[in-house]
Image (cartoon, rainbow, N blue to C red):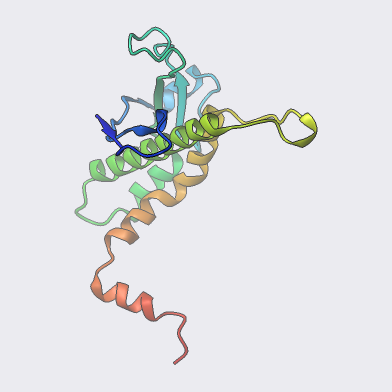
Length: 177
């Protein structure tokens, strides 16, 4: 879906912006498949994205568009720890697994989105004409999701447990009594 901005003095290509979000297909990678990937997964790997090679071949008129395949570590150590030690009695582990998957996918999409914005608005090389080695979006997604994995499910639980009473208490924290 495309949402058109109202006309303004600037005009240009920034008038049309994506108005929706489509979650990518996700391939779940189990521990027995870790070694089949390049680079290989380990217990801390959370999400890896790879260029599917389909972007340039598409008929969408965007030859520079990259379509990524998303590979989620279904046996991530932090996910498994959460399921074993922190999952509440009576809660379905499918819900926690889905939260982990969606959280990782959204994190990956956010990094890709920001990378596209950075590329679009990049103007020139830094002063002195030095070449700066920029980490690829694939490397950034892998490293950020690896760092974020231990915090995702506890954060979702903590945010989900917020109610009016606890929000009021946090408003008072830090105030002199």
